[in-house]
Image (tube, rainbow, N blue to C red; front, side, top):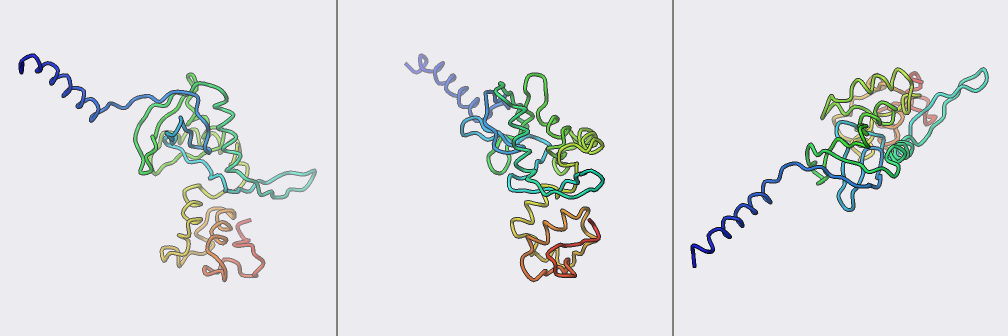
Length: 218
């Protein structure tokens, strides 16, 4: 009796080993778009590897020419980045190659529509940045978008990773206590930091108290 059960036991052991140590597998289907760098297949969210798009509540600044003058327009770049990814996905079948699992349980992947790398497209068209903290895969695409003034590169913006940090309240932490206008790359970045830091301008970025920080950067 024992010898008859032995093959079945071996098969069960093999099955367990496959479940415990799975190889990375593709995720495919017609996803819904969550934001400019995240899609979902059912309940499984997939974060696009190597890129970081503006958050859905994030605003950027565009410089707009009007006849002979120029003026600045604040626009919801996070929402536009979401629309841009939704446009690229359309009603196509998407294939995502898993590279990692992040701390939120999302699959981190390079995703494709046919032969086209969605991650690269979002950066090349200016709707996301190369996420250098985790990957240098899309630096060339970012340079192309910047040179063309595409997407968010049409004006000033705060990098999404900084925007998340400051909007979570971290701009009140001691790490930033000595920051001044020289610590910011663009005016929009300074203004976002100023707004998230709360009342009374603890970093003294608004010298004339008009609600506009670091006006020399404009």
